Image (cartoon, rainbow, N blue to C red; front, side):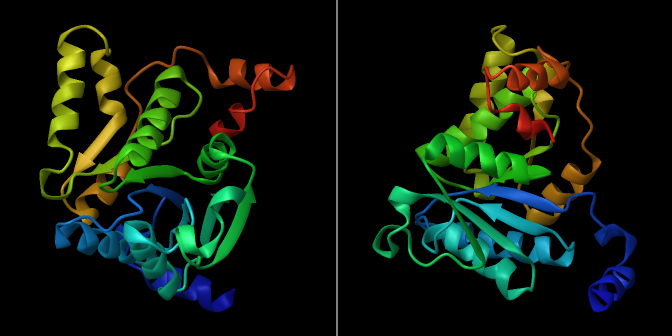
Length: 226
């Protein structure tokens, strides 16, 4: 503990993070562009430099494996949350760090969100998009006010951001809610933006009302607000 504390003291102020643990969503495939793989490794190293731990969907394949290995190799804690049905190594590979088995996909997302202080999406497919859009929706509803970052490597998410801007223009997303998504093309720029993030939107329902619902047994999601 003493060595870890001394290490934190030696870091420049710019590297002292407000986050203890960040949740990363990304593809279980490496992608065709080597820049995606490089970005995953750079993000892992950026988390290490800022003394931030990682929570992710478990496994060692694709971008998920690259970012988790980079964080693990840097000496930070890695928590992989994975449904029991996906645990066989031939499906996801060997998870580094701590493995937390859950019953299904919904519990996986809720647990990752509960553990994290912020979220970052690297390039990915359907699963990554679904996870990203759900935490954005939770922020819009007021379930949490944690920053949500989009690492837009080589413009991978340009069309998604254009779609969101179109939804704002057409009145389906409130202009203030557009700022829930923090995007950048490099890991360092994205981390700096997330560190400075302050919500500009008003949640549809307060965190308190979600907590009351949980106490009454209607939902299990309010833990996410932590």
